[in-house]
Length: 108
Length: 189
Image (cartoon, rainbow over all chains, first blue to last red; front, side):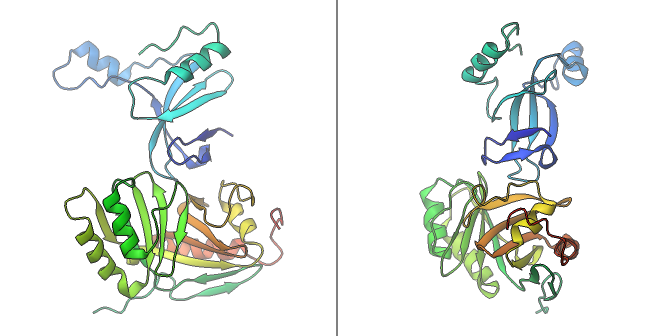
């Protein structure tokens, strides 16, 4: 069972209380963008084997969207953080680097 | 004026714990910046309690205020006074980016009583119901079966469950099934 701590209400919520929202930190190319950018935004996802940043919503709880860093291989949860940001917090990235020395780092 | 009734019209059930429709309960949703002085003063004047901390419910003589999300409070008052309280709140928050709505008729409330309340709620919710994780004064928004609910403990043997009125009957029936005699795992007793 996947357990994520909601950074807004502090509840350690299990998967059934949450709604997944796919990959985090996407750039939303909209009207006026090039076809390539728009295609990338719509269809292209990283789908990495290893460290992955995701969006989750505490749907049955406080209803807020938040971000989570997980490993797609081991399902280890590195941490969760609030969604009002364009990139993961430095402390979390350092923490992940310690645990996964081979990780290439956060790439937007 | 129409004759106001609660979701399951006062039905009650007695099994391993008792499940009772709480009847008409005044409920107000208040959204805004919970850290602002304007809102704190308005809440204090309306229900006589301070703004609750994260995941908490504060209860006073006039009513209760519960933390629902970083920008939402849930106020409990007498059913008959709910509209007056909303009017008072709206006056107190004039100019601020705050919203107060009387949702009394859009929610259903149930009272649970018995030593097995933690066991019954734990049957349908992933919430940690142990005494160390969930105490009197804590409020948990979670699911019960497949439906969103919020509940809190009023004492060691009484709990209150709030859900959307449209699913009130289902939640009542769910609680009835979960509270059948001899079905408690007695994990938390």
